[in-house]
Length: 465
Ligand code: SF4
Image 1: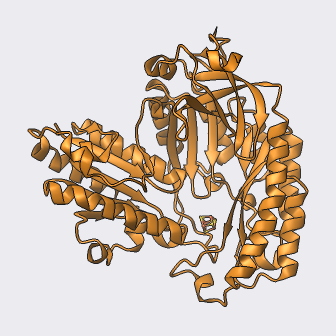
Image 2: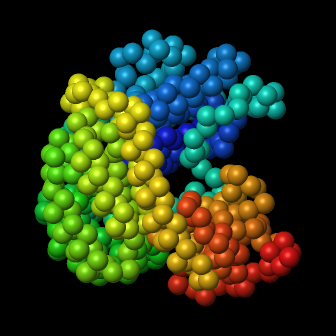
C-alpha cells in the first residue's frame, strides 16, 4: 500500500500547499500516514523566513535519513521556500534527498507522486521502523482526525513589495492572483468535505484582485460568505497598505468572518518603516487601525514586530515600544531580526545581538501585559471554540481555538471520542483562568454546526474537585 507522510513548517501558505499535495496524493491512491515511519514517501514542506526555520528543516532531513538507510525504497522529497532557495545546493548538503520541488512546482510534484505510486503497492510496514525514528524536531503532520475541519485556500501567491528583510518575493515570485471562480469552487469543495472554518491565504492576501474583473478582496470575502454551508471564514496575511475603507466596510458585511485581523506593524518608527520598504508611515498605520475600530469594533488586532532591524536606533525602538504599550494589539509575533541571504538588509550593518536581545525582552514584557489583559477579559465567559485535538503538552486535555484565535485548553470530557468530536467539533468552554499563551476552562457543550446550540457535556470528575 502506498503511503505518504507530509510535514509542514512555516506559514499558512505552506499549510495550503501541503493540503494540495495531500489531495493529489490521495487521488493518486496514497494513504496519508500520520507518522514518517509508516510511509513510503516523506515530504518536507519547508520555510526560510528565519535562520532557525532553515536549521530545523535540515535537522529534520537528517532525522529522515535513518529511514532511508533502513529502506532505500523510501523517497524523501523537499518542497517549499527552502527548496526554492537552496535548490542548487540542497542535494549536496543532504545527498539522501531524492527530489526538490520549488514553490511553483506543486503540479509537477503531484505528477511525480502519481508516477511513483505503483512502486509501493506491495509494501507492508513493520513495527521495526518505528524504533528507527529519532525523537524530536517534528512539525505538524498534514492530517489528523481534526485537520479536515480547517481548510486553507490559496487566493494569491508571491509578493511584489520587496520588503528589505523578506525572502518571499525572491523564492515565491511576484503577485499572482487566482480567479474568483476557482477560489469559490475550492471553498465549496472544502465545505462539502467537512471544513467548518476556511482560511483564505496569501502572502499579501488583501492585495488580491480578480485578474479578469478587477474585483477586490472585499468582493471576494462577500462572495465566499454567500456560499451555502460556510460556517466560519478567516484570512491571513494582509498588508496594512492594501486595506482600503471599502474593503474594511465589506468585511463588516460578512457575518461569517472571524473577529480577528492580523495587521503586521514590523516597526513603530517611520525611519525604520522606510528602510524596511513597508510602504506606509505610522500615521497611515494608525488610520487603518481607526478604520478597523470604526467598522469592526469587536475585532481583535494581532501583529508582527521585528526588533533590531539594521539601523534601529534607541529612538526607533522606543517608538515601537510606545505604540505596543498602547495595548492596541491583542497578541503579537515578535522576532529579533534574522539575516536572510539575498535580501538588501543582509548587507547592512547589523545591530549588536545583545542590544537586540535587551530590546526584545522589553517589548515582549509590554506585549505580554496587553495579551494577558486581553485574555483576562474572557474569564467568566463561555466561548465557542473549534477543536484542535488533544493537547500536545498534556494528553488528558483538549486544545481548542476561539474565533479570535486564542488557544483554550480544557480537561478532556468523559464522553470524549475522537470520531464523535470530529463530527461535533464546536465546543463551548467556560473560561476560568487566563495566561499569556491563552486560557483554560471546562467544556460544557459540543455542537456539530457553529450556529447550533448543541448538547450539554457531562463534566469530567476532575473538574468537579
Ligand atoms: S509584504 Fe513584505 S514581508 Fe510581506 S511577503 Fe511581501 S515582501 Fe515579504
